[in-house]
View 1: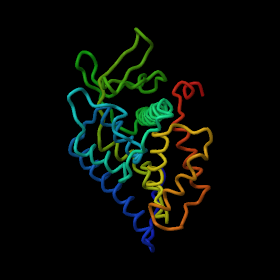
View 2: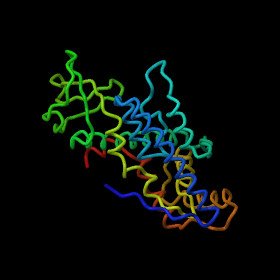
View 3: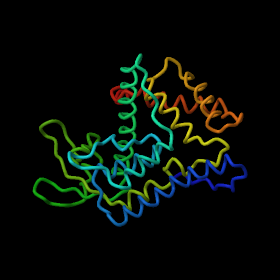
View 4: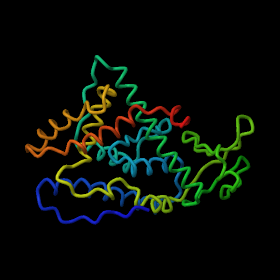
Length: 269
């Protein structure tokens, strides 16, 4: 488990703004933990959303797993969705590359889902979270070891089911997990926990870069949005203190992988 960075007291206005962003995520996480304590039984969708926010506080749009028909986002989900925007509006989609923008958005959604489900399967496999399953007869129990360790274990968030097996021999159970276990298992994995109070607010820079990928699609080169981010940051902060180009390139490269993700290629690796 990764230990959280101990933050020093900010000494500049820019660092104070960065700290404010980090503290907003931490405050919302504390609210999620409180809700998970009060309403401890989580469905697959609820568990996936908690994990998604922890891994992608800026990128998680809370529509990766849509609500059931007639159901709206909860208050905490709406707050998290709004916080993830960090006050930076979506970019105007390029009319010349509408299909590229849609393709990037779909790939990004698939990437985030894949990351969440991969971690959730790991937590189930290792027994880091308590899971209760209900079979077709209504019997409730912990998942049997043969299912927990089965490589065919899959998650169907829409149906709130986990299942193992192949085709007609597939066995499915209704899923429920303990919210307190889940939030404890995610301590040290939350993206904001290991961020230092930098002169540059990297979450805001990430949010801007995401608007570029979602509006214009995946560029031909990984460096394409570096200049745009540098110019936007100068306008945003009214300073000449540019973010390090190497760090920006790393951030763009990471998002390039996300928005060009292919679940099929991921399975083949």
